[in-house]
Image (tube, rainbow, N blue to C red):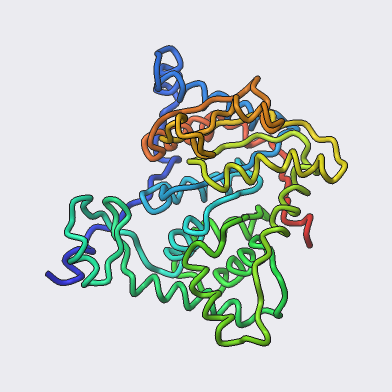
Length: 338
């Protein structure tokens, strides 16, 4: 078989503006088990948007963008439903920026012969395929952006903003998260930025410019994200998956304290995860557990144990159609650093 035989069916990203799930979610609020968890989580997210003093921070870990949720995140930004984003490098570069360059993710099979896929340079994320040769173009584009910047340490936010600026002139797909965030002054942080296609491009950039190259400063990321927490004071977290993004944003409360600033714990928190709490890992740690660290208040928190692509569209659609985002202030946190 040839490569094109595998890359036939592009993943279609769901549009939360195209259906009405409010009645369904409200009915789930009157059920039990995971259905009620989702209903409660949707209500908490809507409460965040209704709270005029609350800044909403979205965290993304895992591969939901590749699996069809990419447009959800774009719509949350364009409709003023999130104010800052903390994500994995793969979410931002290998998935979103990758598609902005004109490439696609494809429906595949979880039981495919991976030796065959490797021989054809097809990468697999569970049942989703990516053309490795196209991904390498993404790597080289990151290098091209880095080559055009003054050599100094950058936070991931600064570099991703340059990616958004690049897309304004060069995007093949205009509706990407990176570009939408750039245009709406929503900062994106990737605390493990090099653990992605960006890492390959930046390594090549540094290798070819040993005396004059830029670097990514994760400590600067932490300081800038803490500045957002200090500026906002009241914050709500919408966390898709766990991992580094989850812990990074929660830790801003502690970091502010280290800097001599008294800020409240995150007032609202929702996490969608499939992680098992018994392993003691960050991804699975409950939001109630986070209170013992002084990170999250437990008055308005909900863990939803579900695979995110099955519940995030319902939660986001519910909050979108409720319309409380229409009266929110535009925080435009990117301007804190200009």
